[in-house]
Image 1 (cartoon, rainbow, N blue to C red):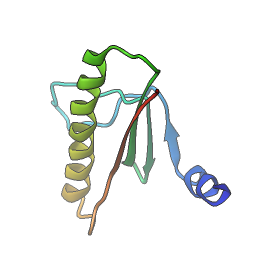
Image 2 (image 1 turned 180 degrees about the vertical axis):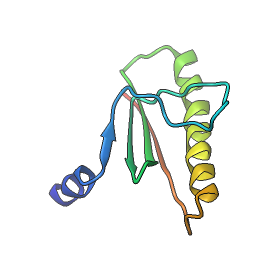
Image 3 (image 1 turned 60 degrees about the vertical axis):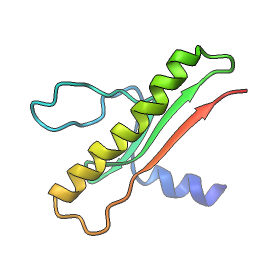
Length: 93
């Protein structure tokens, strides 16, 4: 676990900041947490407390893949070879 923490802290960590979207994009996505490197998000996380409203959980389950696709699209447009994004939805129980 210590290795993972050291590795992640070498990137820019963002909490409650909007996810970068293309110019003119109509929606703003604000994940609970994301990490980026060189301006490209590569980890997107949504965290919900135990007994959260099922409607909110469903919305987040749809939102995380959209945020991942936006990040992948930005990487592809920038010419990054083999782009990847990790999406995580944490539902407390």
